[in-house]
Length: 94
Image 1 (cartoon, rainbow, N blue to C red):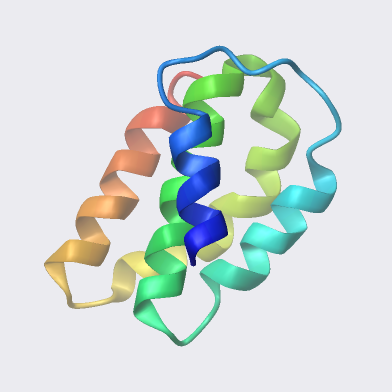
Image 2: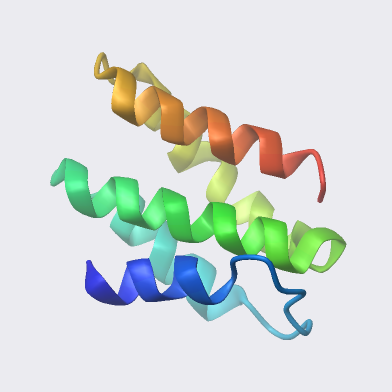
């Protein structure tokens, strides 16, 4: 979970150089689907940070992450729904 928070912090307020994000997106997809709510929230936060940092270059990775993140929206906890809403706002930049 600490590494996921590092990814989120590293992407804050910077423009990230484009690159191949397929491996990272596959990892985030696995972590988002985790049953541990703290890990999945950290992964959603990292995906939000990447979407904000990469903007249009993250469109390919975004396709991998959309389904599992929006499936998390079914959670009844408002904290999870808030993270998904933040991700949905950052999707519009991509």
